[in-house]
Length: 317
Image (cartoon, rainbow, N blue to C red; front, side, top):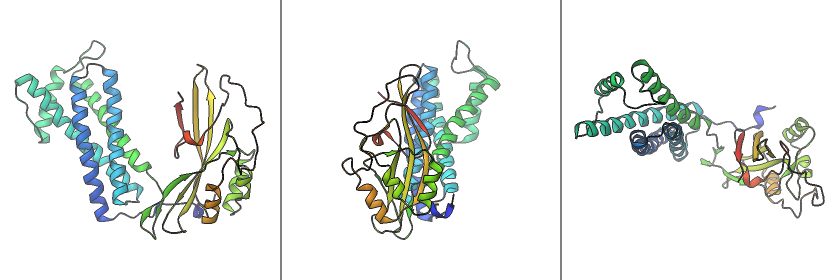
C-alpha cells in the first residue's frame, strides 16, 4: 500500500481551536456530569448504572469531537489528550455533584466539595462504611476503591479513544472539513480485493465502475466520497465491505469492515461515482437469485445502513 495516496492529518493544532475544544468539551462534560450523578445516586439497578457509566464516557468523547470539529484541530495525539482531559474533568464534576447529593440526604444540607483533598476525605469515609449494595454485599475498603478506579477507566478511556478516532479529512488549502457523500449504488465484491486495491492506487478506477450493481447483494462494497466543496484538491474515497446475515438465533445482523480509507480520488472520478444510479449501473442483477435466509447466511447489504470507520455489528429491526 502506498501511504502517500491516502489522507493523513496535517497535525495542525491552532491555539484558538484548542481553546474552543476545551470550552465546548468541558461544557458538554459538565452537563453530562449532573445527569450521571443523579443516575448514580437515585438509580437502584446496578446494571443500568454500569450502562450509564459507559454512556457517560462516550458522551464526553462526543462532546470533545464536537469541540475538535469547531476548533479545526487535526492532530490525533492532541485529540486523545483533549478527550482524556474532558473525561477526567467530567468525572471530577460528577463526584462533586454526587457528594453534594449524599451530604444533602444525610445532613439535610448539601455541600459542594471542589477541593480535591476534602473530596478524597469524604470518599475515605464512604469507603469505610459502604454506600450501596451489589448482589447483596456492600463493598467497602479496597474493594470499593477498585470499583471506583474501574468506573474512572470506563469514563476516561472511551472519552479519549472516541476523540482520538475522529479522522474526517480536512482540506488544508480551504481550511475546512470535507463533506461526506454516499454513492447511490453498491458494488459487487470482487474475488480478489487486493487486485482491485492495486488498480485503484494506480489511478485506474474503471474496475470499480464495472462492479456497480442495480441491486444490492448479500455481500458488497459500499462507497463514500469525502470532498471539499471549495476546491478540487481534497477528494477522498472510502470503501467498506458490507454484509447482512441471519445468526444462530434467527436475528438479522450486519457487519461493516473498512477496505480502503481515504484514498485520494480525482474530482472527475468522484463526480462519476456520485452520478451512478441503479439505472446506469454496469451489472444488471435484477434477475439473479437471492439466497434464502439461513443461519449465518448473508441476506442484504445496504448503503443506507452503513457507517464509515471501524467494523460494526448491529441488529436490524
